[in-house]
Amino acid sequence: MPILHFLRDNARWIAGGFLLTFFSSFGQTYFISLSAGDIRAEYGLSHGGFGTLYMIATLASAATLPQIGKVIDRISVSATVLLAAPILALACVLMAWSTSLVLLVLSIYFLRLFGQGMFSHIAFTAMGRWFAAQRGRAVSLSAIGVNFGEALFPISFVGVAALIGWRGSWLLAAGVLMLVALPAIYGLLKVERTPQSATVDPNQPAAREWTRAEVVRDPLFWASLMGVLAPPFIGTTIFFHQVYLSELRGWDPAVFAASFAIMSAMTIGFALIAGQLIDRFSAIRLLPSFLLPLSLSCFVLASTDAPWGAYAFMALMGVSYGFSSTLFGALWPELYGTRHLGGIRSLIVAFMVFATAMGPGLTGALIDAGVSYPLQIAAMGAYCVAMIVVMTVVSRRALARRPRAEAASVSG
Image (cartoon, rainbow, N blue to C red; front, side):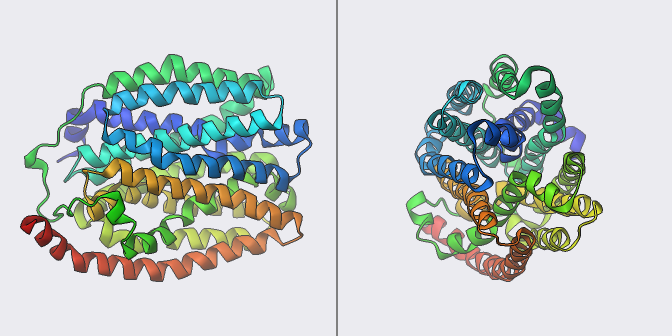
């Protein structure tokens, strides 16, 4: 189906998914880290201290998400949005008004749970469930919302904070969520999409419908997670410590801020490319590819003091993010079906949130202990290389068992 025809027929659902990932930015690490310097100054926290608090709050959100996330298997997508958006807005208010470490941790907990967690989870679960043959395209068009947020929100936040302070900026974010995001997303998604039988792709037969209990007993699930968790762990770690890295390299703070636009542009472009490739070849076949540019990005950032290193890192990171954001939205329905997708995805997202929690806390503690930060980044690149091998094995074994899975679903 030509892209213009696809958008014409599915505009409301694609726009709803796009806005969900766009406004998930308020719970993403890159957005919260824009206030990191002010938070550390006001609360007297070191890099490791703030990283530890951030890790605690994010781990708590990861532990909660599997229970909250499966609600989307029981109620409509729009009803789930009505539950999640006001709580995310309340978290922004709590961040603005927090005066103690307890309130700070609580605000981060809700930002992570309902921003990065639930908003993204709702978007990708809906796209995975509503689309079949065009799933890659639908996921890619929804996923780029967060990249538009990465391009828009950092510079906007800095400008607004200069006028009304960082706390005022968080209050403004709460107002935007309630007055703009909630009515727009609800209005777009209140009509559920029903996949048409004519859109089923014979080259991508559906997997049998796995339950979440069956998924956690599948060795390929745990093996695939080893690679899937690399982009959120690495990206979150670099973004969280971007101020420290800039100080270490002697870069002007504007260098990293400007490089986000490059990453966003690359992510958007390669997310759309990945969507086309997934619809043609399947997400399972493309699984080994997404970590190669990520490994290169780490090696570049670890080895150069020149400002171009930040831009090269972000460009390569954008390639990997583009592929992975689309791939992860389409992979799980291919592997495990759509009937229990909400519960399965909530578990996966919980692990991804867990990875984003471990990154800042672990690396912050290592920084405080005197371990070279560039060396840590190089180690992340080496891990990606090892995971490329693992993802190749996962892809081959998943493809080998698909006929058996299909036969089992027919006979059962």
